[in-house]
Image (cartoon, rainbow, N blue to C red; front, top):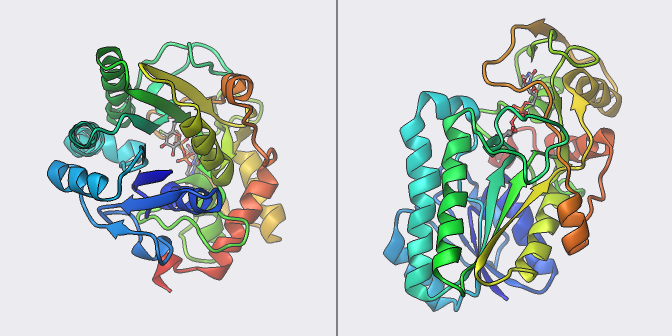
Amino acid sequence: MSVLVAGGAGYIGSHAVRQLIAAGHAPVVVDSLFRGHRQAVPDGVPFYQHDLTETDALAKLMRQHAIECVIHFAALTYVGESVQQPLLYYANNTAGSISLLRAMQAAGIKRLVFSSTAATYGEPDETPITETCRQRPTNPYGWSKWMVERVLQDQAAADPEFAAVALRYFNVAGCAADGSLGEDHTPETHLIPSILLAALGREKKLTIFGDDYPTPDGTCVRDYIHVDDLCAAHLVAMEALEPGRLEAYNLGIGRGYSVREVFDAAEAVVGRKIPVDAGPRRPGDPAVLYADSTKIQRALGWSPRYTDIESIIATAWSWFQAHPNGYGN
Ligand code: UFG
């Protein structure tokens, strides 16, 4: 299938492009390179540098490549940044997605796999979180994605041929097992890459954001899913798209690890102590988030291959050891 990968030069998108090629699909990448890396796109894959707001240019390349399905990763994803710059998030994530949808409409493309987030649930009423839990985001990032889900639902109701799936990611982590693709964010704020950069001496001393949560060791609990397992779910979801509806699936491994457990696992992987202090809570962090992903397991037969945190961290460590300066070297 000819697949347009929006955001295909980013961390998750680049892993998806590789899987699409391996599965015999023909990916075409569009990326603004605002946070993506041209080097993450394999030679031979058509690449276009466009912002999602360039509706006409997107429609043109969709027609040119006879695109059959769009997988949409192109988004800004920092919760803290979204609180400080909400307009940036609504413009990129919400308005950008609407522009992409208008380009799809102009080009007659009816199939979309959309990257949504656990942040659309906000502070959950219960864990594990199922897809039917109330969605009540607590920051502009979560709202910017929630609004797109709403748009997709309405579009699927209006157009019986429009087929979409929203995949609600929990904490995506790890890198391609051979260390060739990875995570290269500036700034880096996520827990696992920050720990590994600190292990390489590339990051200042780390802080645990709060050790007084109502959890067994007092630190926040999250559900870390390997990027390759996450991308595999996109391929099965793409094949299973059903006209006239928006389907939503959680993507996590269904087990939570505390921040301290992540530190312990990372120390075991890198083989040394990583200095850290406990500090105050980070505003907006829920205490416990982990997924019930049985819906996608039952409906589409997907299941994660990486189910323990050490093996996930080990793949990220391969990347950071080989590329301490990210794609810059
Ligand atoms: N943390 C620390 N110290 C750090 C960095 C993180 O203690 O230096 C903690 C956080 O407080 C949190 C956990 O580690 O409890 C994980 O933090 P991340 O920043 O890695 O990830 P988040 O859980 O904040 O965010 C992730 C995705 C978001 C998504 C969110 C959904 O990155 O895009 O899950 O809840 F919105």
